[in-house]
Image (cartoon, rainbow, N blue to C red):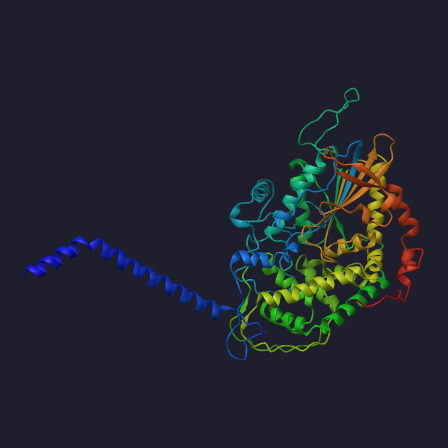
Length: 588
């Protein structure tokens, strides 16, 4: 009895100690179990390194799949997505010491859009995060209060008479990735670009001043523009270019001027304005595509990655998966919106492949996304050579490739993405460096460069036009940069919401006229053949001593009238386009 009492007394005194010991043992076992579980998950959840299930039935490790490492790994591919942090004011001018800004001509590529092919986009959010973008909220509120809207609809319409009457001003859904249409992310991009353009150009151009004749002086009235034709807007007949232009102009201009805008239509993605039909340009492009197809056939790893990713993402591939840029475009829908890499979850019956459709019919199908009633006229434009699909978003060569079986299951891996995207980047740079790329650009952009120069001359002669906007596509800027010799680090890849500005200046000392060219905020004037080296004037750009290069207006006039067709061994547009044999050039 005494022994039992003594044991109970000791147990009572050391009860806390025993609790700590038991708790420590429990925590140790819990941590050990968690590490064992995590090790099993890491071993079993990595997607196969091959294209589909491996022979052993297991899936190889993908490595670290945390959100931070995922974002870092694909950051170099997301450059073409133009995240908002990439849209910055850098070398953009506006105010140069001793110089007056006479006018600006701005060429843009539309913002973020949905894929050009039918893609499985379940779970992908192409909008902006939870109403946190103040510019988007302000724009949407403004449109809601100032535009007529359909009952229950969340997007308003352009109600002015003209080619864009009835066009919606906002995407149909806030989170959706509609086929070939601008997304809310694209709207956000151009609201921010417009804000940058406003900071740089609105005050130097006098876009916020109203002239009042009062002893020769100019009085200012905030939020009122000079004249109704100060701002000229051209856009192709696509919703994505139309909506991008108006979103950008909303943050650039006062509200009353925005409401007074008149939007003019370009019937060509090249903005050729009559100088459009050119068989030689089509031949050069076809040869470039053939060279690209040859490079693809040499890379079986790229072919396998392309077909695996395409078979996982694309919904309808009756002609097989042969165009790497179509698959890249589909993959960008995932990468640009930071969605998880997709998987195939169940078998799909192989689809019979009919004969390939007429490529012109495919183009009309794309255009019909925006405007069904315009199909006959647009088909005629295609036949006349006035319109082309976007360079990397439309038709590409169809090399004969082995097609994978469509019933495999598995996931797209980071290694697959790296293989495809790195090849696309390499091919883009090789194409941009090739002689045919520049020659094709000269032919396709001739009409646009003539148009730009004509507006430059208007600006220096006292015309009221201060700002001209061309809202186009990637190929619009490809043609223009190729013709001018502007080298882009990404090759022929043009990011969403890209901008190319021609700033026209007058010297306050000598009344001479110059211009400079800025691409995505970077001064590229020195890259232009007729502006390089001693052909340009270097001036002080700001109080920090940064410099700017100004090219005489007469240089671009002389280039257009005397030297433009020299690389094509011709003297005019008709002669250059009529040549049946393009100059010889090496393969990639």
